[in-house]
Length: 224
Image 1 (cartoon, rainbow, N blue to C red):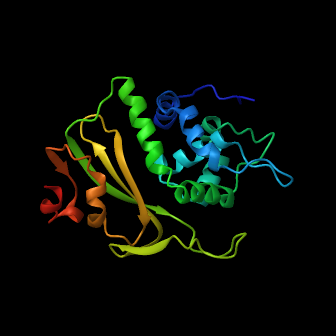
Image 2 (tube, rainbow, N blue to C red):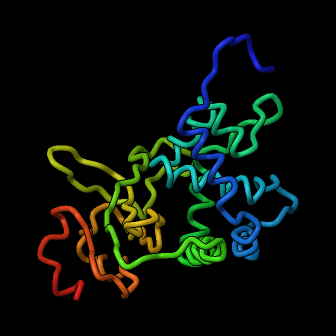
């Protein structure tokens, strides 16, 4: 059913997801994860691997927590279309399923391998990393409540203070190419880890310039 709307407009989010559909090497990434992903057994069958991978990417792109991405899938037809969910046939994966998938990637240290595969794929298309890097970090929220299936907080999450506000979750640190805006390096830590301590892992080593906000002040020796 498409509804009775007379006027529609393709949003920036929809255009972005259409581009990512073409840019991300989905088959290659799934091949990296598949050996570590649960197989169908006698219990409840696991959610499709590529579907969970797409949900994971949505979390990174739009800064969504585990419960946040579950709610967003119910709220946004564009996100459901990208993931491949038809609410007339099935529910969206719940936050615990999303959490478990993220833990598989973290425990098997697949994040770096996926990033390398994406960058190699882009280089084959003629998109190359240059000599300038922008470093930044963002907090990814997690539920602090224990009102969930496991009745406990995620032990890998911690709280941190930003200004006058306290947050609970994890922190994504990224190194971004200054010209193409491609993320060439990424590190995930607990939210209370200082951004400056991760700086060496965000540089590819051939930079002539590095940009960052005041949280990276005083790190010129590390950069050199």
